[in-house]
Length: 327
Figure 1 (cartoon, rainbow, N blue to C red):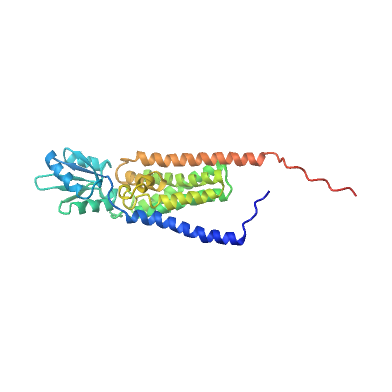
Figure 2 (cartoon, helix red, strand yellow; figure 1 turned 90 degrees about the vertical axis):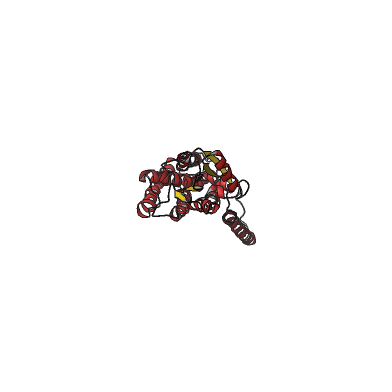
């Protein structure tokens, strides 16, 4: 029997209840991490003789218990390599003239500023500087939400146009490739916010759009059009504020920082920084996350396409209508 439509009173009550719930969820997801920004096991190095580095560790410990995850290095060269390899966000080097600070503003301007505040009198060397076209990282940060929206739009359009199976996969892949090319042209060639190899940056942008689009279309293929809303909820309302792109994952409260790196926006931000500024260092983790999202989403699209095809070709077992009486 067909489902009985809800009465106008119930629909009115549903709107009155659901809208505040969504608003509360959005405020919690966006405002809570922003209001609790602080270092939490932030990887930072100290370099120099053991006695000097012990004093530096004590000084850093004054920022609060568990604020920094301190890595020790023998000398400045080893500390620089660790910064360039994205093992640490910065390093403090002990020397006869006092401590010196190595930062990497390309890894996150907020973290670089935080380290300078922790050691306000130390001379600063920016080992991996943010690009001149985007010195504060604003353009790169602002690129993540449009990528998420483009992916959601691709998944929604594939569903709305009733594309299934291989055709849906082709549409998602084609759209993602074009998003990557356009994104690299705007953020890289025009704004100068993404440096490094142009095609690698375009590939990272395309993989991000594909991971999100495939996830949304895959959910819709499995559970119906409600999957579009679920996918948008996960990617936009959770993935974007939990990504840590504007600050760093280690500056967000638990579990937001950790969870954000397992969602496409957070993985996209980390991957873009790695390929754009650090020659691909530490790109393996976020690359794997985005690949898994894309693979699972495309698999769900294919499975949903087979179900739709089977439903269309299945025989109709309904009872035939009774013949009209003769005469």
